[in-house]
Length: 140
Image (cartoon, rainbow, N blue to C red; front, side):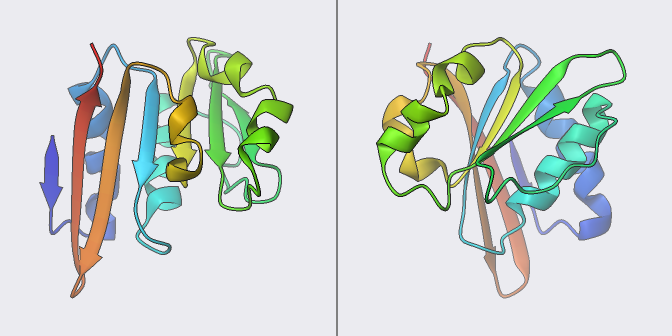
């Protein structure tokens, strides 16, 4: 899936397309520079999924758990402040990553070696105010 030159007003539709392009997948790993819109897109994806909680970046908590209207969990990770891979082990990343629930990770490059064998890699770029999103399934 690829989206190019989309506006913030179109972000909800981009989020919907991303989720429907990978209907069986629950793990979405986001890659992109600071300020490219990873958290904003994850907020829109949570909205599409029916999350009823306030969605915000878990920069200091590392992980936030949200609930949907149907009482399903959605996990949102921000590994920006991770100082070592050991911190991911300390939070029990396996319980989240392999829960079968939706997982969205930001600053994924810091834990790339821990990712499941199968996930959706979402790469976001912005150049000269032109946004591009590319999503591809990694693994079998």
